Image (cartoon, rainbow, N blue to C red; front, top):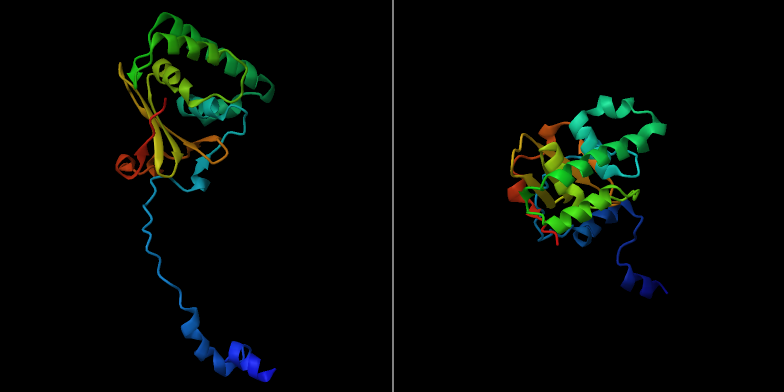
Length: 193
């Protein structure tokens, strides 16, 4: 039995003198993969609204501010959301969506009908409506190295950033300076259908 132990365990594992002999066996191997630096902020610097429609509420916070968002009574959230979305839908009935990437008239009708439903999971396909109505450009980080961008061609006064986590909750960066200004070189643009 001692001979077998000496074959499999040439050094007594609990002997303090034998630790120097074990170190060559436990050297960490260097990894060959090079990790690209992410342009996203730390998750602690992102506010995720705990609402069912986090995409809408993240855009609402970016437009109206945190004070306006927190002043809304919890019972009136659905009312405020539907009122704002009906304003956007009525705007779309009178005007065309002029964004980059472009949106067809048929797609505009689909967006109007999606806005007026009570579905709590609003897809990214609604972003052109928000960009046209609020006259903004929207950049959504889908993961650390992938982003989606909608630009308002008519007049783009400012650019807002949203961050989506792995559970498809959308959030707002607490300060705009935490987004890397060179994110377009570091991340890949997501092209939708």
